[in-house]
Length: 353
Image 1 (tube, one colour):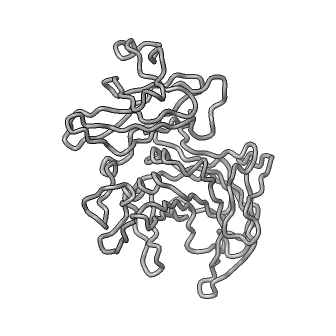
Image 2 (image 1 turned 90 degrees about the horizontal axis):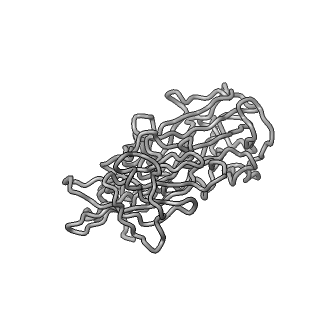
Image 3 (image 1 turned 180 degrees about the vertical axis):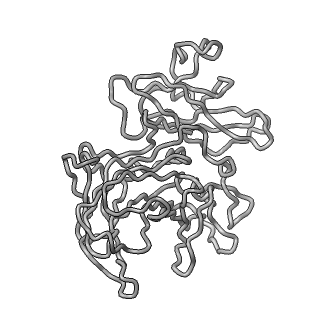
């Protein structure tokens, strides 16, 4: 679940869950946000919808797991006072649901207390490269930070191709370079709340012959090491179906959901890419361990700059697919259902770990 929080404003956030037989469940807050304060809703807000929205005292760490008494399963988050909103989320917390009769507990739910723009994770490069790296080049592992404006780019990162390792059969580069996101800001469990949201960034080239492009162009790649029962899973959004790029300055925007041309990489060059299912997309963003943007578009050299990279949640919540909330049946043992088992196949051997 994602909840957009304006600066200095107490914000009501609704928790969400699903029970197969529509029985009543209890919601238990199991961790608190690292910054800001979490409260129960006040009685007057529950009855009349009036301020103050929150109870007199915040939820304390010694009260965890804290049972939410609001019949609509709402809590109130108050962000730190007198500071600007963050690039990504303010903070995050977790909760579980419990079926009172049997005591059965759900898997942990993630709540992203997102920025006013709905960003769960973001880099604007205002003060530097923000931990981004470059992979696939010979020498440069860190992009160059440019502290000035250029069109839509305003303080951005830049890198250039250092090697052309051509496949003589296809004419395309066999080794390509990418911008890679930093783990501390993008590889977070609450990124799961971005299902149905968008990946957005600005891109422009400084030079390069964009009439002669590498093929295929794996523009955006997201990976999850724990998915597919620990074998890993990779999703790719190719530069096609409206995401083509000719080197000119452009804002790119892609929806994180089925029906938006995400492909699953079979991790085997003898097999074709397949359309990613909703549970494959949900599992990968819930366990994301790699997020990269292609820079190596042309068969010769090029220079590419990016700015304002963000992963944002959908304004409508919750959007995380109900069919995936309980995970997927594990291929190594059908008695278990886990989100990390999504993408696994009964036709493949999975050693028990």
